[in-house]
Image 1 (cartoon, rainbow, N blue to C red):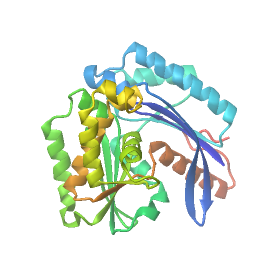
Image 2: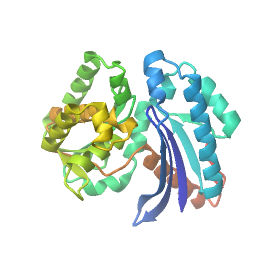
Image 3: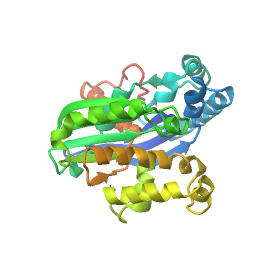
Image 4: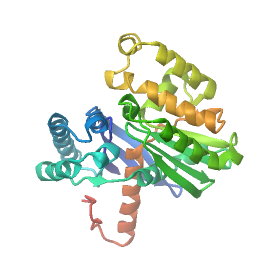
Length: 308
């Protein structure tokens, strides 16, 4: 059964179509198609606190195209969410209203804690959890969301204004790093004894380039090597010699820095990278809502959902 999700992030805007199914009591989300457009809303917001007319126009054009694809693909349901950059833009509400008027798509703003909760909901993570405690780390252009669970019990979550575009814009000060370090140290007694699960396009790419072939993980040693190696190249060299996309080549270095900081702090030997993200969590939750509606013999959607 196909569902769709739109994720309006600080760095890119994504449309994902995925098959969702209930297998042995667990919801599985299997990607069918993913389209990513690097609008980079955060580049404006973290510099001027507002989204420029050009980027706003590009965002609306992108969402119009996404809506056409949704109309053709005809998923069972779809949902659209926006995160840090749109939340912090002074003209965010105005742009959201314009999007609704011109595309028919209603965008839901989600805060950092809700973002962490949505990502955490993807339960295919269970197969990676070989320790008592698991820490989910999702890094975007504007923020880092971290959740901690013990087996299946939620312990705590937090959102930090440390993101790749925010770092490139020199908007992350030492106080922000200290705040992250202080929060992580609340789990000090479990340092070296917890799973770290990383999500986001950058850690996926780093694991692909520097991790072991065929394994969805990267060791701390390899991550350190990745950071040193990536930093040694100029932006031009990362694009021309390493073959990275321009919108990946600049943010991958601060991404490696953030994951390295967290892994070293909690004394993790490995970061697992199961290739999940906000869109996966959104579709997971859409399917849960669908199953609830089906159990009540009603296909009428909740407010904000577009069930057929």
